[in-house]
Length: 159
Image 1 (cartoon, rainbow, N blue to C red):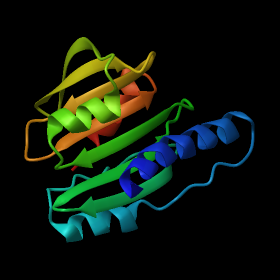
Image 2 (tube, rainbow, N blue to C red; image 1 turned 135 degrees about the vertical axis):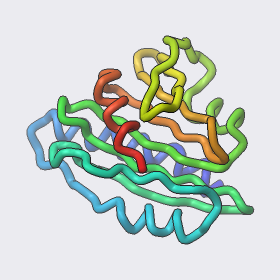
Image 3 (cartoon, helix red, strand yellow; image 1 turned 45 degrees about the vertical axis):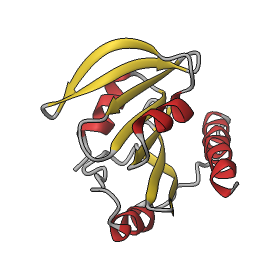
């Protein structure tokens, strides 16, 4: 039940952050380092953290959850253009994770090569974009309302 509640609250937090950002109010920036450290400490999957993003990438949420040997790291950002994206990393079964996070209206847009890896690009949940990498022992998703260039920039920053 807690996991279901968090799945609902995190996108809500992103929506509130975008609303405040576009409304001229200050964005509440968070430090994602504690959530990333917690995910790495759990040793459930190799955690790739964004490195070298410009200061205009504003992290607005960061949480790691683990239960029963399955962990999920979520970090939300306001992009330089004002879009909202979320980085999701998890060792959960890729099929169930993707169905929950991207919905049932996934429209493939082709492949994108990022740092030598092939990521699947899709349009999801109406007009949102997603990049997905399932090539390792964890699934990485970059999803939100931003251009492909910004989503690719976030994916490129992962190390």
